[in-house]
Length: 369
Ligand code: UGA
Image (cartoon, rainbow, N blue to C red; front, top):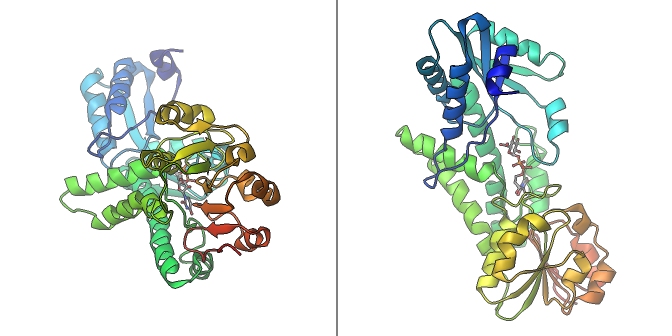
């Protein structure tokens, strides 16, 4: 049905449009504004009270703007409230996250709107946090930025581990056993990618700067993330004319999404230095091909064929297929038994047993026997 027809029939209208980044890191709100106008033009006083729920990730105070826009474009006497209901699901486990969330955040400025959305979520058993609209909007950016901060924090700790021979896995376990910290999102690696963390950290930096209170801590979180794969590359030697195999192109496991994927940034860096790069991914070959093929990267479906004759194997995404790789088979196809594991998914002890040289992030290396 058209927007107008579905608005006439519905008591609750969810806005779930993209909010992509502008080049300066601010959030592009043109889709939100457009949909607000479309809703306004469809609203009629005789339709009764409507609750317009924003699910998209938006800067704090966007709800106020949406409300003003609707008032400007709607006729007189329409009755509505705006609710902010941020989404916390992750790609790859979206349905499970939707049905079993850690919490549901409902930001409303009227009891009438809050009641309607409470009813919507009644079938889902999860703690509900009720807030005002501004707080709910802020929670999403603050939550994603905090998770990004945890990742950058452990990546910074990993560098200290590399210099000292400490093992970041044990350090993460030790600090994560404190319930106030928790072990989740303390996996060191090549850094975070995807369509959410990079964009939301940038947006939160931009929002704070615009408010005249620069959030310099988040600038450092971003800097650590931006430089993590370069630091990783610098541990390899001369790359020119080297055959490098890359396992993993998606920004994380269980998705074909390559948006802001660190794996692709790494491939670009390797190619830029004259390496001969072969890459594979269980799901993301078709999404990565338009970016990687013009760079000269050869895409190979089978992970062992991808590694054939390679002088170094780089693991760039945390797929379970790679964590469970047949190391004997891998040893049989590679030219040199050297692995750089950017996601810490292999076990150093297993690699030592098969005679690999193995480097990972923040864990002691296994040198060639
Ligand atoms: C993220 C949040 O986890 C969701 O709660 C949120 O709803 C979503 O953004 C969103 O804003 O829509 P998502 O981007 O799907 O979800 O992916 P994550 O599972 O959070 O992973 C993001 C990146 O962090 C990946 O590149 C992953 O490899 C990396 N990561 C994750 C680490 O490097 N270390 C970790 O310990 C965890």
